[in-house]
Length: 220
Image (cartoon, rainbow, N blue to C red; front, side, top):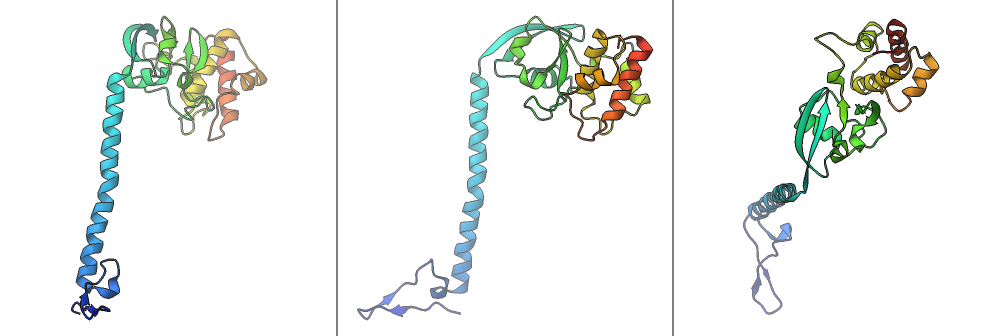
């Protein structure tokens, strides 16, 4: 279908509006629509590139602090950005990825590590706060290739299901067993109240911790 032009009130002709497909040829309308689609698609891409550039600039200018800490018996001297959390330091800088990031807001307990012997949520501890501290992660439980008594008890009692919460469960239970020789099931439940298991495998986890306490008198 060819282009059509309507006579205007002065007897001349008027060019059809590019926004009204009824006054255009089918080809012109489709070409215009295609050009609009290309431009619309390109805008988010340009926006993402700009956002990435902004993030890179922010990272380059972020203030840093030099800290020293001991992780699983190994001393580290690290320059950390003041905004980093302890879990980011452990996973991204020290490559200790056994510690998991779950909720990232101190609710699930998957990121639990021991700081000076006490269980803490590493997603809510700034890395700079760990200066001079002794940190133990799940990688530090096994010794000389041998699982700790608690780790073996988790295996024997089917403690892990998907396994995502297991590192945090192990660290909290390790702290409990280091301070209570043979905790009963109620004491174990109370200690692990801050560690969630999305698979709801709580009974097996409690049994594993009680079993480890009975076998080794509280030293995990």
